Image 1 (spheres, rainbow, N blue to C red):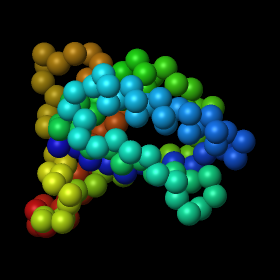
Image 2: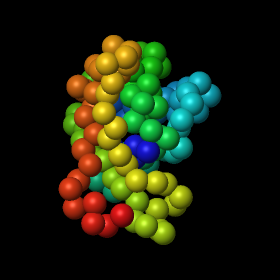
Image 3: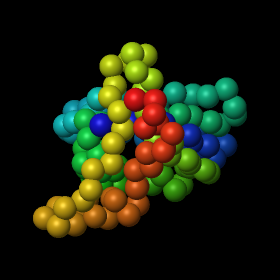
Image 4: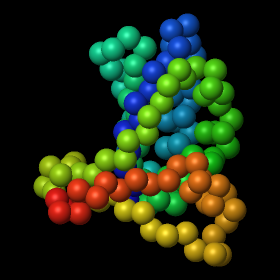
Length: 133
């Protein structure tokens, strides 16, 4: 599984546009993609700050999402001032049913888009998680 929390700061004059994008992204993602476990956007307490919780059955479903036409078709650069993708791992017995984030290796027979996604969005499994699973 791959789960991450996106920390997103939006340009002050682009809040409405960003929220319209999020609504379309959630709709398209849930209607057209497989392997999506969670996909939610939340407003934070800081001005112009949002979070997105994304969880996928595996790394490949996450990469398909990132490379999808509906993801690539939005002009995120126009609305996002800053973004940080933080890979997260559930606490055993307290993670809402999600399972550990893992990073399986690419294989030579995988599609080119998976190789591109691997370069753009490498999975970062924190070393200290190993003793906490």
